[in-house]
Image (cartoon, rainbow, N blue to C red; front, side, top):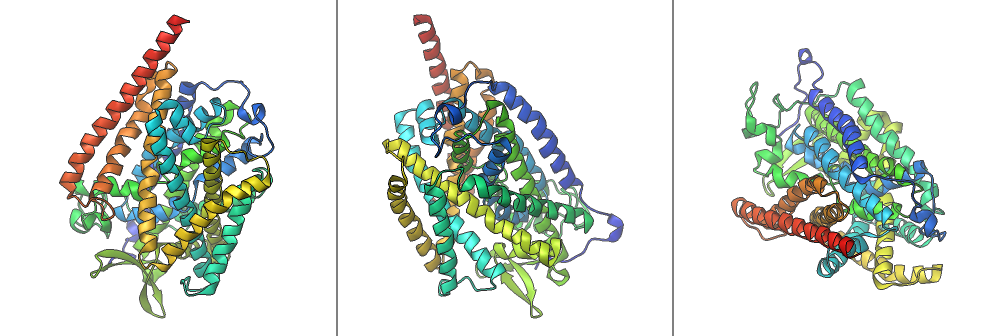
Length: 545
């Protein structure tokens, strides 16, 4: 059993690692974001919002509105539920999140959004087709459609369950009719947001959702300091260090994962980076920045809209990670949570006091515990509403992106509501079928979430490859290391995860790592070869001209 408010007062507020992480996130983000901007070189050319304005998808919108829309598009339950589970690896999360965010996720979002903007508002399948080849394009097209369907189902399931259990006080079980009423309400909203013009639905209500989201994260951030929440530094000893650290001393192995998951033999690489996807790097984000490429007024606003909003998502992830660590350190007896190892399943469970007894709860219930502890009953309820809003505002644009992807791939006309509804109906039928299966099957959602998390990271490899080839084609080959650092790392992470996972090939870790290393070398080699070939073709065309 893990959990208990054991920090001595003389130790002071143990926030150094958390603060260092925030400095890396904000300071590093400002410097690297400016560097990314200098590499891309935005100018004053007409953007697709004006050049192709159609009143539906190509609509010029203010920078502040685009920024909030993009933030809410990319910030689903990932930067909340991911860190809640990822912090179980220990305080190393406070460093891994900001470093990965600055040089990986924010860079990925910026270049994918800006390249799509410059190329006329391309959606990601067309982006991949433009910068790779037909075979890769077909694979991506199939892959992204499946991912977006999974996103739609996951982001009905999670906000629906949080609303049922935390707001309505219901069980959230499949046998409860209220569960399906709530799901259906979210489902109907998704249909409306998917079909109608982006500035009529999404553009008008997102600023309200954005305010709730920011207030929630800032509220938890303030509570960390105002309430002197007990955090732990990477050089200290956390009461979850288990076999990797000695009380009062430092063990270098603890630096690479010191929580209960690491103590159980879960490998920090790759599991942490698949678990905490949306706060670090998420392939799903490229599909959303592609949407905003059709509404941004000026290329010079791209750093604020694309790069800085991902930095803000990293801040949200940091706050939830810190709050969860504090709840674990406090323990259930002090209003937090206690971790207990379930010997039957071998999994660590969150537990709270209920009627004087420790009761296991899901990660979504930890959301309610932290919100109410940090912000009180009223503020906590507002924060919970923000958490419910997050996945809804990602799910609607995911399905909108799926509609646009199919439209562009098959050159379908979408110039009126009848045609848009006609395409949306079969899409939503598939999403609802996945939702019903995940809810009725005892292990359905766990399987759904694992495939969603892995595919979310896997899809980023296509965008990073495209960004690299774009740089070669546009005489920026000396900067190809920027996307290739993230591409190499995540090719290794995604391969190692699926090779070892129960939902994958179930290889032992040594075998999984060997296969992953081979795959990573192959991925990097193929991308660089394609980039150099594209650059050579460009030089030949220039000479011929």
